[in-house]
Length: 277
Image 1 (cartoon, rainbow, N blue to C red):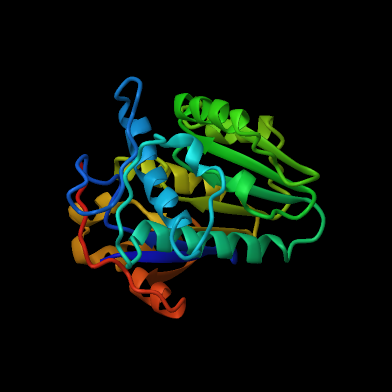
Image 2 (image 1 turned 135 degrees about the vertical axis):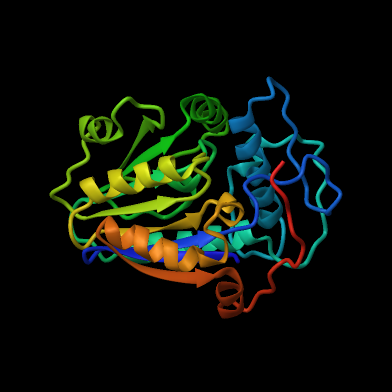
């Protein structure tokens, strides 16, 4: 099952999507383009690069969403697939983008956005954030630094009067690190998760605990469930398990499937299944 979730933190709200791939197949047998690595074969970098390829392809299709900066991450000789249907990752990206902007534009004064990402996400630059938005990027540091250099090289700029701060995923105390960067738990916040490399239930639960401890009532959490959940003992009971897990951390949960989101947007979801490599 693939789904998005929407949750609220007592009563914040959360939306999460579960997709069928963390990174695409190493080969291009299914017709999707794949970015090539030119440096060390870092698994975190490889995962981030593979979804970069999906954003690059979507940007060059009839516009569903546009990532003006994604081209700096891919080879100039990349081969593009010609599929007409949408990959679940692209559906999730559009869903999360829309939820983020719709929510942040309803907050008065200072806006705090915490993005839990893979290190190569360009949302801080490509989305039209309102003024007085502080964006915290929690992601693998080595991937983020590599991506930041490439983005600087193409002149990526933040929207006016916005601030962007990075917090390494492997911080010894993530809550403390966010506070040290200026996060204020007494102000509303918006959290989004997509592509953050969490490979165990314990690490996923640890992130939920961070959000639960830092987000005040009325905050919002949107995102995409890790694909490996379908391979755990949770199995088809993922909806029931997720509701219980999030409610135990103070969230109200709303789970949405990819197909439902695609249909509401007048799009077709890719029927092809990708496996984790």
